[in-house]
Image (cartoon, rainbow, N blue to C red; front, top):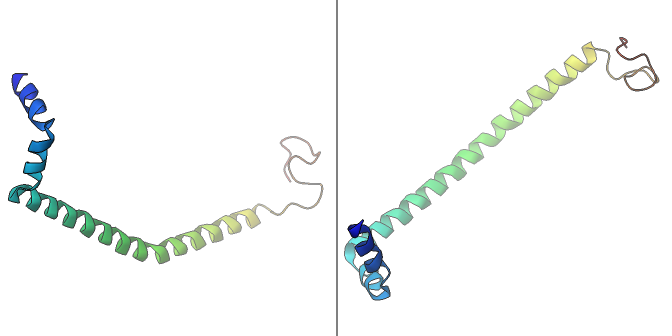
Length: 93
């Protein structure tokens, strides 16, 4: 509890923060952090580029299966026979 208050008081001092930011270990840590973030962003961009063609193939396969299933059920409905067009509720098309 006391340590927390002391740290809070020290870290509230702008002069101390500025001195710490100019120290060699803090600057090295900041440099490492910036490099890691940049490396992560570049890796994510490369992964996203490689994912595009696979997603297109997945979309095409899904749409093909959907259309095949719809055709097997007689879709598109003949005029006046589809659900919600005045036919019996629950009646087969």
